[in-house]
Length: 406
Image (tube, rainbow, N blue to C red):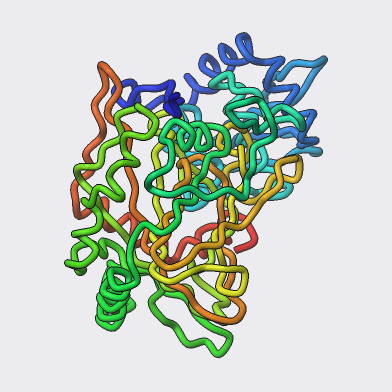
């Protein structure tokens, strides 16, 4: 089985001028996928969308069962002012509608910000030929064709083909009893020490505030560089076998990790992330599906903010930020014990539920797919890559400036 759903090459990415997008690329896409995109637009009941750049605005709307493009602004639509780099990134799936808001490359000047976000799967239908998800399109079945038991957990010794089938169908796994209490205690002590060293402007941590306005570190970036105990576990066979689970050649040779604490009473910042896909900023067709692995340093139940996932959502072309109102797939929570693993595909919708009675700790790491034949994975300078990751701690301000509710 394979979870590799890539359709684009990094080597093909280029800077596309505005008029080429408006006059050639979008009309050509409409010729190919105009009916598919219009069906998704009508299903989601979205308004028409204007894209405005400098002195030109075009509007995308449904007309006679197809998507149509026309010059100018319509009073009944949403309008987004977009930067040139943002427009080029959008039509090449380098950035999503939310990804552009998170990087200050778009501003919604007319209509609802939620409509702009809702257009994301319509763009993917138009540009990549992926049908917008409709109710009933996805069934979750076990290897015998019966209903999949979504509450099931696995162990290291279970049949690998059965585990792979579950991951392919549901987009997530719960692997129980992988690491010991003592191993997790050592990682927990290292995380406490790393959190104590954090400073609000260190560029290596994310911060959040409680109801009293007290700011505290909640995520240590590149935590693997500060924890010898964790580094031993990242390359342990009890974790590394997951890289071979789907047969797609996921890379387990360069493991990074981030250490998170989920405190109580957090009101601001990026501690308890809302529904999203890990490809939610962009790049689905270049990198999905990677595997994201959560190591339960402490257990997680409904009182301590267990991870939420939407089973089957990795197979659904839905908006990548927030829970799409048209989505018929029901979310669940993955309750774990200390030393358990959670695994989810990079395009599985998931969220961090807010703990209500006790905090929890978790480490996230993962495996990337190898480069496709004829392609080359982009290499951002280490300093730039780290700066971009650290900058996300203030992303709510940029979403608000784009017209969204932060």
